[in-house]
Image (cartoon, helix red, strand yellow):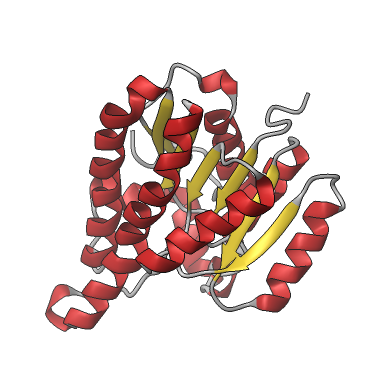
Length: 248
């Protein structure tokens, strides 16, 4: 059963990792996918082709969600190409980890801008369309770190916690028009980025997780499908931890 048949979705930061996983699973469920990427045109073209082969409309856009004007232009372009926007997944994000005593102002500002301001930019840009349609689902990708904090990640934790406060406010503001806003808080998800880490360290992390494994991009994507679909029609303002029990 295709849960997202005919829905149009925007996914930011989707040329690799979790974003790519979401795009693939969305397409398998029948969604048309507009996705953004920041630098890797080759990976974006490859993903575009892969999604189209699943029988849906798919298009990649080089766009920086942290830039207000670019976010507005992106939404205008997607509306032109796809006609409507039913789902927004705010997934673009970066880390610049350091202890506070060593963290530069620039590293703090950049993480807030890319991770948190991008959510403001994109939500504001799609809001008009969703209000007019009187329906929509916004899914914001936070982190277990945004819920419980993490030493050496004060900038990242602040950005991801801010996302939760913003999303809960949007749930209250937009709910009367049947626009739902929810948050996913992934735990330790194994992607090509974590593949570069020391195997011993990764093994230690896995051992500390109640389900005894790292998550996959598909684990996150499946939760996104649920939140994007009509199965979750009465769910808004929630934070769903997809973390194997790391934070209970």
